[in-house]
Structure formats: structure tokens, C-alpha cells
Length: 244
Image (cartoon, rainbow, N blue to C red; front, side):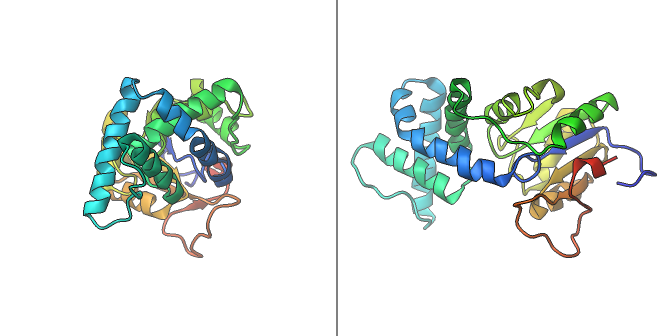
């Protein structure tokens, strides 16, 4: 964004590779959810939310097999055990599955509460959220992780609780992050036109989908992120300080 542009009315942020190092997700959060998955699922079989997520996972597993994808191996006649194996496989392949993210979010909630987890964020995130709030902008998050997981991540950061600075959260229940309709729904939910929203992400395909709706976009280039094109199709930033 240049100084001559009219400022957006909302900043929509991705998490992994944008506000938070990819390594925190892949080296801490995912292994934690994998390590604690079996015990958590077995101890929450009568929890309504987890019971519903397991039914959804069973349907996804059946669909994967029907579609020719590699579903979790049927290692046991026990449906719960088979679903646990599928849950673990989805983590390994980093599937953006809503029921998977629901279970992970609940596991991470417990991890944060016990002090096992504390979120890493880039040092420019906290000052930027405060600055945008002072300027009257909405701060929103859109991640494939569940809304609960997003809230826990920003509540337990090295900088303290950042949730008072965040106005809205969106996850895969609003839609796939690589589909334009998801961003239209977000704009409607924020009661703004798409052009009033600036979406910041490290994934070009997500930015392409947002741009299709008229949203403004910025490609976030962070340490540890995959290499970006030499001439990116979206304005590239290395810090939120570059956003006016």
C-alpha cells in the first residue's frame, strides 16, 4: 500500500507464515495434537462436539476410499480405532479438514491451559494490531485452524493475550481458503465491501482467491516461508510495518 491510497477498513490476516512462524505450527502444534490425539479422543467419546467430529471423520474416510485417495488402513474392526488412525494420517498429510481442526483445537486448548504450549508470533504483530485498532480498523483472522484454536493461539502468546485486539475469526466453516466465495462471505460478515478489506497471507493461491472478489492483498514474506516468486503477483511485504 502506498501513502496515497485510502486505508482499508479491515485487516484480514492468515496465521501460519504470516503472524506466526511455520515452524511453530509444524514442529510444536501438529506433533502435540498427534501425540495426545488417541488419549483425547478415547476420553471424549461422549462429548457432543467430539462425537460429531468423529462421525464427520468417518464419512471423510469412507469418501477418500471411494474417490481412490489413500484412506487410513483398516487395521482394526473397531470403528473408533480406525477413525483415530485416519485422524493421525490427516495430520501427517496436513489435510485442511474441519472435523480434524475441531479436535486439534480442543487438544491445543488443554495444552495451553496446562502451560504445555505458548504461541510464537513475529515481533511486528502486536504493535501492528494496536496501531490498526487506534486507526479505527477491524482486525480479523482467517485460518484453516478452528476458531477455538485461533483464539487460544492469540490468547497465549509470548506477548500476552492479544485477543482484545482481534474483532473476528474465520475458519474453514466459512469455506476453503483458495475459493473466492469464502472471501465474499467474510466481507459480508464484516459488513464491508471486499475492497474495504486487506488480506495478508503467505500463500499466493489464497491471495488470488481474495483478489478475485475485489479484496486488496499483500504477500507476506517471512523467515522460514517457502520461496516466493521473484515478481510476485501481489505486493510483497516482510513486516507489518510496511502496511499503511
